[in-house]
Image (tube, rainbow, N blue to C red):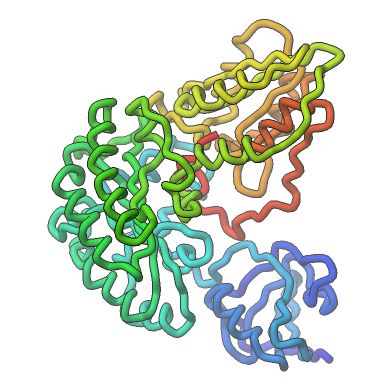
Length: 471
């Protein structure tokens, strides 16, 4: 049953983005634009509150419709039955932003006049739990740690950067950043496990500092689940006065050699690697990425850790018969500069009559050539590169990582349809996995990447663009 109510409007209700077919929400006639204000009298801060509140069997749902009308809907449900909606934002009381001013902050290096969501410095432990966004812990207080314990918000993803208190506070430009050890202790006391990350800056937190960081994180097992080390990325828009430099071939090789000692030690101690390097270190050093056994099931895949190996594995696992094409097929395969050699090697392993594959590495003019991953390519840079190439073209394969999560739109707000319109008569298809890539090459007439069923962020963090996605 339902009854009208016009009181007690919540300050930050959750707005429904979509209602899943056949769901409880559809049965209750909820629609996009409705706001979930409270459940059983509890106002909601985020979808975490909603999830726990909906665990009851008797529900009193306070809803505000798009026209301002408010309604309380009372109903019975199964204990584990979900509401079945997606929200415009996972947090209803506002995204908790970052209070730090890191030397290497990627958001500060975003080009001007880009989508506003890219400039949001999120540092919200809830988004860390929900989506794997990395947080620094510097804006968390006692109530936050209590909530982590109460709701069992584990694992979290923590940007450590270094364990030296003085250096960390300098790098983050935040006095509270020096408390990293005690904050990790509080996560332990709350029963929360966590994955960790180091953004490695040449001459700053590498060398002996990296040795200390690895040693102290390793000592925090089993609450510390993994440690990822990724190289700092710099764009041409960086204006921070602190001098940062990226790793060269020799520097990357030194990091690999240093970390490999720990990897071998960890494998001997407990049969897993625990410490991982971003793919870019291997590209920079001119070394092959490690085998699958080095990645322990790829716990930090979204952070660029093992993406290339995962892509290769997917390619090799795709057992699709190859049939020669009756007519010539000319495919342009767009990729970032860093992973282009890997993509080229896979393509060259396919020898089919009438199949012509051209690998198209795209230099990142928009952010600067130092940014060489596929996930940060803009539509304009891809367009310019493709339009400069002569010869026939049947199809274009694009790295799906260059598109916004869950949407067919590039970083510079060009839609996939607008992009494809520049190449009339040429089919454009995204590729995500190695299996996608292989299927596209072996059966282009029937290949189509259906992205409708893919999960999207309820709210799109800038992390969806700054994670160094490979292909």
